[in-house]
Image (cartoon, rainbow, N blue to C red; front, side, top):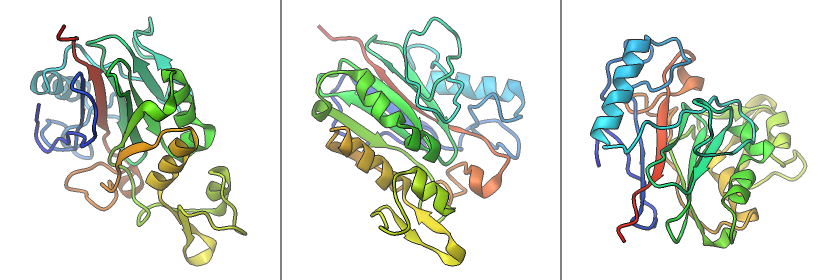
Length: 249
């Protein structure tokens, strides 16, 4: 399973779990979404989005069309199949082989989860608002079982070099100006820099998830490979996907 510049998560998932993260390379979209935009809500030509999604299905040999979500920076996690074509949620999970969970990002942290038995998987869209709202905790709870038995992977997102925010964001994420959290540090003019991967790791750890891989691929600092909303404004979206292969037995 490979594609133009695609990323295969390096995590200790069981063999039944398949996953990948796309980059902006290998598609047909015109600027500013050039070239492998997979989002239908960013003003791209619908025909280009359809072609890019068709290429994704073909090259990745996906078992079905991914279930695309209407993401709202909240904490709702929906179980798939959901009974609607485009559920409003910021994460999805399934225990059905062949159902593809997917999230779209261009700076927010895409988080994949699975259990060690390879029976449940989830994909989560975790920007700072979703992290503050508890989207990762909601995903862990939705998967059920022992959180310590879950495995997580953090995909490409904006790194702290590009994520400068006001103190209200630090407070929303559970930090304070009086006691600087480990995932934030002061910048100039009363601003802060925040490491969203570190926030995600801390929240997962607090929820009981101790096996976390990934992080470190910065969308903001690598325009050749990644879309970044904060860097470019009008831009495309990448996809991070996970699904269960059929049980070989």
